[in-house]
Length: 253
Image 1 (tube, rainbow, N blue to C red):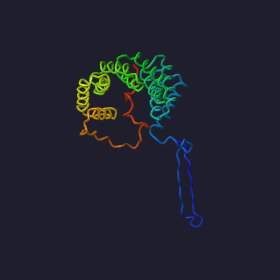
Image 2: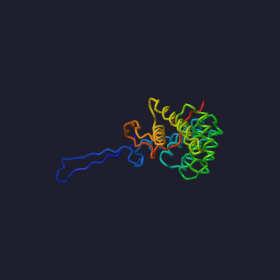
Image 3: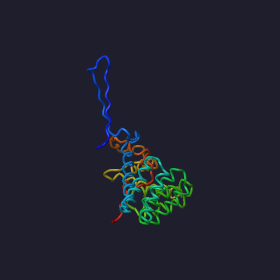
Image 4: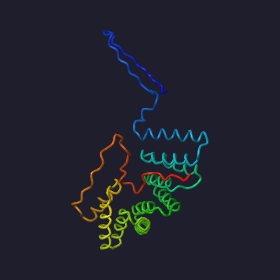
């Protein structure tokens, strides 16, 4: 049963008037107000308990990867990197999910060299995942390394030809190399592919709007966003993240 603190108060002039306040867990830290902060505390506790009793390493590693993702959402980037690295150490093998979280965190810290290193390691771990070359393409394009960025964009599209975002990003880079007509046609097709989706997450909605701007489509309107929940959500604009997957990839038992 959680600890309970009961506070009673009365007025001297009106002793019959009485007020009672009951506080559960009065010693709990006051900064665990959001769902995400509570989830971090619960997951940290789970990991600590599992490690103390020598629990399943794969389960502990999953908990640590979850913590890395939560710390990323809290803008605690070094802590996210530490937890992701610890997850791989516990599991004794590299994880492209952990490496991607580390790359995004390093990029947010302004450590471009580290971010590139982590993305390339993620590509080596899972060469069939288009997310990693796409993310690295965005990173290198910001460093004025357009040719390398285009090569990676081509690779992302080869691995994920059904993803309109990859098609459109490749077309944007084509235009920078003088392939204007092809770029226009591909951006139109990318916009069509995204419009054909029944629903679009914030990431695809952002890119659909960007393609509309590239095409000069002033008549395009964004789809209504879902109503806000009680939880404030991530402390960053998820739509501006490169291509982070929404769920962690679970290990086979």
